[in-house]
Figure (cartoon, helix red, strand yellow):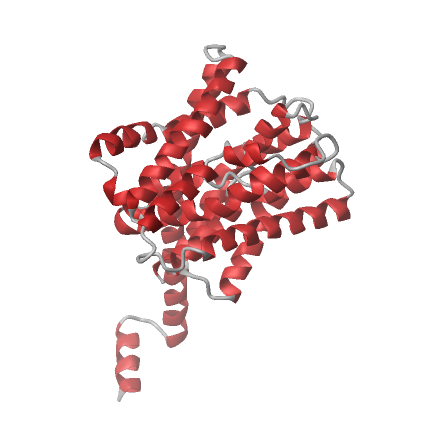
Length: 352
């Protein structure tokens, strides 16, 4: 009966089963591509907003409205005041150990992402005979894990998913800051300093995260009065826009004209394409979908950490390749970052 109905409809519309099937496939592919482009446009626009804000810092430095000393001062205020207060307020007001019983896995995820980046960077640097190897590995292994992911979440998501991903990122930063400001500093400066300095860790946002978690664990966060929380929130709200402007300002101070094209292309390819593909393979293999999978992919896709430039400047290291790697991974991530995040959403993995 069904065959007769199908034959009748096909004849009425002048279609055969083969042409109908071909038409369906063509429409499906066309709709899939259109959906992808729509999602890509949304993600690209969210990424572009971040780079427009960074452009303000870039041109303020290029026009010498902000000089090197001013940029250093803003960076210190960012690291020691605004971002710690932003982190403190978000955790104190939105985090609880009851609601996030699996909180401890996020520092472990952070360690894993860093380790994967280091191993991939070491492998590519060894095969391609890149020098200096430690700079190449650091550019692949350490990412801008705080400011850009938080800004992207702010622009892409809303409501409960956005707030939950905020908390995931802060918990992720426990592991990242612990490694970045201890092992990371030692890794870059071991030929000069030779030992780990605890003050590097204490002066980072890591302290604010740990203090917040201690207060929450003891239940003392309930006794913090509004007269304190309100100004803390007002200062904290300055953190993300200022951080992105500082990123742009730092990029303006990088010499990109004497670049080694081979090394720059190699580190950009490794950081922005190979590492995200590795993360995507892990997510699909272990079915780590939803917001956690999105967090892993996001952290694998973002450009190299600007903190690497801060560390090299502070310890007076040769930082030409470091800075160029930071510049090119930031500049080109405006295309690679939306592509991978859109692909993740297009597969419906964000909704798991």
